[in-house]
Image (cartoon, rainbow, N blue to C red; front, side, top):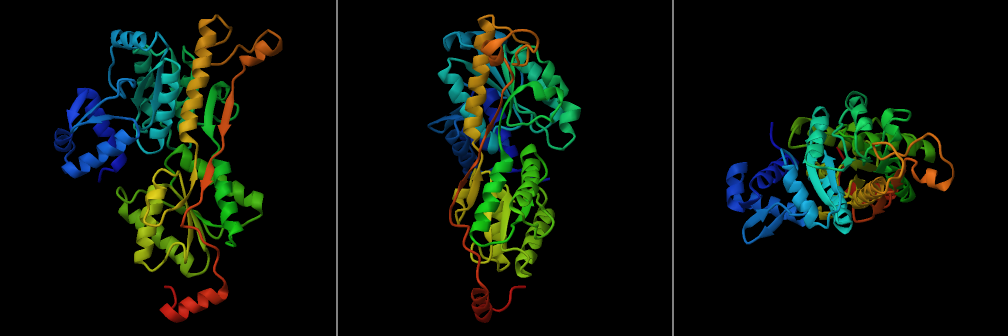
Amino acid sequence: MRESAAERHDRLLALVRERGTARVADLAVQLGVSPVTARRDVEALAGRGLLDRVHGQVSWPSSVGQPGGAEHPAGAEALSAAAGRGPVIGLLAPSATYYFAEVIRGAREAAARAGARLILRISDYRPEDDRARTEGLLASGAEGLLVAPGWRAPGDQAEHGDWIAELPVPAVLLERRAEPGSALDGLDRVSSDHRHGVLLAVRHLVGLGHGAPLLVARADSPTALAVRAGYARALRVLGLHAPGPVVDSVPAEVEPEGFEAAVRALRAAVASGTATAALVHNDVDAIQMVQRLAELGVRVPEDLALIAYDDEVAALADIPLTAVAPPKRQVGRLATELLVERLAARAAGAPGRPGGVGSAAGGEGEDRMADAPRHVTLLPGLRVRASCGPARTGSDAAVREAATGPSV
């Protein structure tokens, strides 16, 4: 199976973490890629604050701890002291690239402002490894935790999540929503409202004169599943009917045949007049689909108005893509600020139970209410670019068909 760019980035980060400092040329050899590819990867990761880059070498940022593997508590204590004796905060993330790179950056910035040290571990979207990774963070001196489990499938939370509610230190669930009534629902959490993001996209396309857009989406992460649920909800809210079943998307570099099938399904919907607009999760899939559709004679935005979901690289497409932008950096920042507040209250002797949640029993007044769990939801925005145009009238379509022939 061909390695994705995100997987290669995580391997690169692991190599730098192990060595502390490495030459870009050596990394290219270790990764089995060309020097040009290695330099491009390093520039992308350095631009996101995940690496420091100087004169052909890269190093692990001193303000961020190890993303995986063992870390010595003595080193954690020394760096914590150097940072002003602030708390040590552990962050479990499913990846250090793409979507979560900005979440991590926001957490890193907030931790630095609070004089805290942030240590990072990556689960590679293996929820069965989340608990061991978290125990490693605790062993490295973490006094509080930001937890973004590596859930992928709908049943992963129930199978791999209850232990999070039993953590011995304050914890904040990061960019994840717990099932109502579950043990995790009593935790602090900060997340994006993807239902709102999808509603923004559908409403924008309808406002341009299109019918309900066709959804093209993955199903391999909590964000992907939330986008799918948000799509069904948006159609209900706006009184619309889906133009067809959701088109299942997969990464082109991992499953080229499945990706091609998704592109063909979208092309068929355009050619038949079933859909004139689409919402595609995620950015990378959207960019590659626009390129492939052009080869098949479907033009964006002339034949198809398209909105991407995530806004990681949407602006860099040949035709800059309109995109829903979850507030990733703000999620990381606010989650860290909430955790620092919990840690400060705990250090001051305020009542509360582990997991960052106040005691549910006894007490009166506003002080007791301040200990209540907080569910902070941030709204995505819509960044309008060149990939969305108004729906064509019948005369517009007739003129194009007369000039170029019917779409097939």
